[in-house]
Each structure stands twice: as C-alpha cells, then as structure tokens.
Length: 145
Length: 145
Length: 145
Length: 145
Image 1 (cartoon, rainbow over the protein chains, first blue to last red):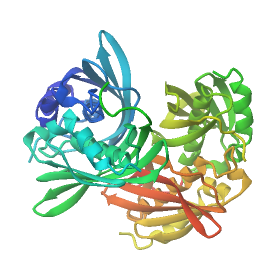
Image 2: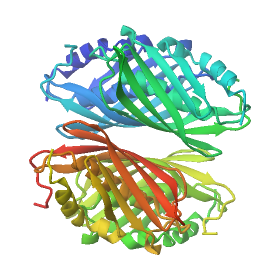
Image 3: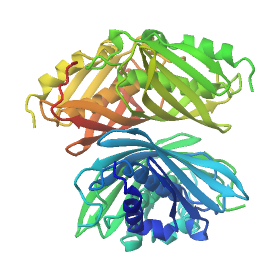
Image 4: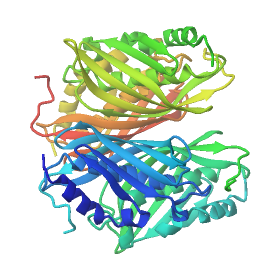
C-alpha cells in the first residue's frame, strides 16, 4: 500500500473542478474509507428545494472512487466503472455527507458502498445508498496529460 | 396524458438550482423523451480535465425524471427512486448531452434509459448509459410546500 | 403490520417452483429480515464448478422480496422492481446463503439489501451483494388468478 | 479476435450445470451478440406461475457474459463483475429469451446490455432489461482447475 495516499488524494480532489463548484470537501480519509461533505446552498437544489439527487450522486461517486484509491499504488490512476444509487428519503438538510468504504479490494477492481446522510438540527437522515465498481489503472498518472 | 407537459416541465426544470449551476438546459422535450445539454467549463471537471461523472449522472438523472414526467398527470410530482450509471468512455468534449426515453410506463413507476454523449469537433462519443426507476406521486405538487 | 407474515411467506415461497428446483429453503424469517439457503449440487454451477451467479441472484432476489413482504399488509402482493448484484468472490462452497434486510420501508416501495455468503469447512466467504427495489401491490392476491 | 469463439463458448455453456437445470440453450451466437432461450416449465416459476425473475436474471447474465466472451482471446476466462436488472412486465409466456450485446468493448472490461422477452402465442412481451459489467481474465483457463 502507498503510505502517502492522503497527500495524493487531497491533491487529486483539489483538481476536481466539480467538487469545488459544489462546495464539497473531504472530511475523513483513512485506508479504505472516505467521507465528503457539502453545505446547503440554493444552487444545489431540485425543484422542491432539497439537495438534488445529482449532488448525492456526485459526492458519493467521488467518495467511493477515493476510498478505493487509498488502496491503490501511488503511480496508478482511478476510474469509476459504474455505480447504482438508491434515493431513500428527501435530502432535506443544512449539509449532506457521503461516507464510502471498500467492500472488496481486488487488484484491478474495488467494489465500494457509500451512504449519504442529510444533517439537520443535529440529526441525520439516511437519504441515499450507492454500490459502485471502481477500477485501478496501473502506471497511469492521475494528472491531465 | 397532460397536454401541457412542456410548460410544466420547463417551469420545474427552472426551479432546479443545480441545473442552473451546471449550466444545463433542456434541448428536446417530447412525450416520453427529453434531452439535456451542458457546455464544458473547467468547473465541471474531474482530475483529468474531462467532465466529472457526477455531471453525466446529474443530467441523465434529470433527463430520465422529466422524460417520465411528460407521461404523468399535471397535478402529480416526480421522484427518482434509483438509477444505475455505467461510464463507457472519458467525457472529453465541448459539451455533454443526455438523451432519455421511457422504456416502460406503468401508472406508478416508469423505467427509463438515458445515453450520454460528449461532443467534440462535430463528432459524438457515447460516454455513459443509465437505467433508472422513476416514481409518480399523484396529487402532490411539484412546487416546494 | 400483518402479524401472520411468516405463514403467508412460507406458503408463497412454497409456490415458487424455481426455489424448489434450486433446493432453496427459508432458514430465517423475522420482520424486515429473511435468509435463504441452498446446498451445493453440480446442477447449480457455472463453468468453473462454483455456484452460478444466477443462483446467488435468484436467492438474493427472493430474500429481498420476502424481507420486504414481511412489512406489507396481508392482502397485498409483492413485486421486484429491480436489483443490482455485485459478485465479490467465487461462490465456492458447500452451501450458499443470502441474508436480506429492509433498508427503507416506504408504503409503496421498500429498498432492501442482501449479502450472499459461500460456506465451506465452517467459514464464510462474502461472495455477492445486492441492492433491490421491491414494490407492494395493495389488495392484490399473492396467489395465481 | 478469436475466430473459434463459437466452439469455445458452446463448450463453456455446456459445463454450466445451472443452464442445463433451467433447460436453457444458446440460440444465437455471433461476435458481440448472444441469445439464450428457456421453455416454460412449472419448475421455473414464482408464486403467480410466471417465470421467476431469477430465471430472467440467470439467462440474461449468461447471455451478457458470453456476448462479451465472443470478443475475448481464446486463452482467457470470463467473469461477471455486476449487473442490474429491471423487471418491466410479468414474464408470462411459453418461453423466455434473453438477447445480449456488447455496448462497449474495453480490453479488460466489456459493458453489455440484455433484453428479456416472454413469447406467448407468437407475440413478444419485453419483460426485463439488464446492464452488466463483464471482465476478461487473460491467460486463465475457462475450465475448472
């Protein structure tokens, strides 16, 4: 395992324009586990003024990808193959948090799950769950060519 | 069927803060079919400067939801139950377009599929495909309460 | 909740010809939770002599459906809307067990997850995981018309 | 491409005990495309006497896997990573047929879709659709070790 995954992942995350646009930040980062948080703004809503499912999907996808990436070699690149997202409840809250972990770590593929919670007045609502397949591309730089 | 679905859907779309933030617009809207387009900006990228998978997911999700909503009564509300997204190729382009259609239209549930294409120099790359379950909530307003 | 769900579900399961053909049985059945077990036979294999993924899929699907059905009214019928299955490891064992629980119980839709384990020489291998959407059809008999 | 994929796939299919138990046969087999058919029997049903969703899942899974395998080297092995199945209509028919094709053929991963139809009195009902990720294991025999 690459001991410096935290530095590598924070740099990669900082290059994701979409995460900055959404106001997302990595709030937990350990081997096989990543959490990403987004505060509420009107720019992130669907038509009922809750967080749009696309925000849940985007932060859960990034969280799964980076949870998998913690277990990959330092000179590899990470790629989302696919994910499935079930929306469980309206994402009604002051912030949204996606917590992702690696369920199965193969050399090429990592299977991850993420749960998304809406935080409001100190309580959490489980609003979405994701099951994702993430791929390791060995020897391919994480930076744009 | 509600003949005025186009007006209803354009108003609903206009209330989705996230679609405005992404710069997305509805470019096709017929019964059972919706296309949503997003021009490229650096704010929409992942770490390799391509469109982030979260953008593909968000516009495909909205396109599926509204394709289903064209077939729902005027006084109903629409809800994404779940979707699965397969990323097929890097979303490398000047714009991204999601085209969604209803595969199966039940009274309560509509099953939809969407294909996402990256447009670059006049050619299209098929970069993602979605399979989604959308729910009709009868007698529930599409506007925030 | 229908207190007699156990009787109702065992009768429904007994009418599933496929479960009998596979040699499957319900081994746990409580509110919101069902486990289904299948002993190994050569008739259940894929080309490497492990359990076929179709067996994992079938018992996990039935387990999710009946876990959801425990929480439905006695005069309703249950329907699988969709599921996603990730295969995590070869299903190499003397028996296969699918354990399903309800993650979110709405009136019309129940979201369930199942985990499938292969048992060999007293130890369990987590070989598949499912995320499923199950629907309640109120007032519709579970028996053939 | 391996020109002899048809022989290789028919031999592999013949070793799948589950396909024999279900009474399934390969009825079409060309590069990137496979169809698998199953006649109705009471042993394949769910509680309403239709084909069990597990049968649709199993034959669609095998059809996706073998459609992908047509495009893999002769000395490789094939593995289903994951699939999602949407059930669209009751599988009420005299036979069930799954038609699978490769949507995207990468070196390691092939993304496939399958549609399942129930045939009754000469007409087809589209009863399920699958989106699957299939993996190539190069240099690994398709036979049991």
